[in-house]
Image (cartoon, rainbow, N blue to C red; front, top):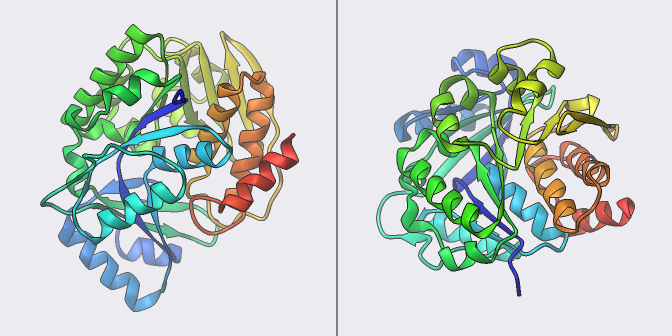
Length: 330
């Protein structure tokens, strides 16, 4: 059976908290971004959180992982290259992937180190802020790739968060070289404004001579291009990709193919938690592409999926939620 989507990304166990803006300020945490921290800092943050709030949800996470799980839930065949430790979090993570129908390399779990963890803090305006300790996923390398699985895929999907790791960037370059030789379409997501601001050189290295599909949100697009106008930003991004997909929160999304724009309406919902919305959008969009749908149909499924993710707590839907979205779409 041919694999449809092969993704590379960080493996992180998410712990989610509902917090206040005052708490973020008291901890000197930059709101709305992902910040890398060490284990000691994360332990102190968790202690402070547990004194004031309650952990609302624990889930396997990572930007690309959320996307491939959505892709799989719709009926796609997906594979996720990642790296975890042989600790409890590592076992939890791989079990979660398997339960979602996503395959992973047999050698993804290694002895020593700790599995990466992410503290996700959601404020009353539904904005998500993340503090991440990468743990062993910072050591992601070409050795974690499953070349046999990759060579079967139709799409290669790359997570922008990998831009902070030299060994992960080398893994991406190796995978991209195989994809190029095999005629596999390559997609990349910027993942977070912080990657554009603080890891731009790493992103540029992973983008290399361009990709087939580029996902980003409006803030990431304008930051990358150094402009205020979204139209100008998209024009700039077309130097990197013929197909640019930009999410715009409650205003929907813009799909630009060779400069021809298609506006995608948002599905109005009561926003609860924005964590994972962009990831879900990308996973749903790629699923539509894997079925050779027109771009506007891909966009509508993606927008509907992201809206449902935003309307509840946590980065993903359950299997029934994805099935309901697909049924409503078709």
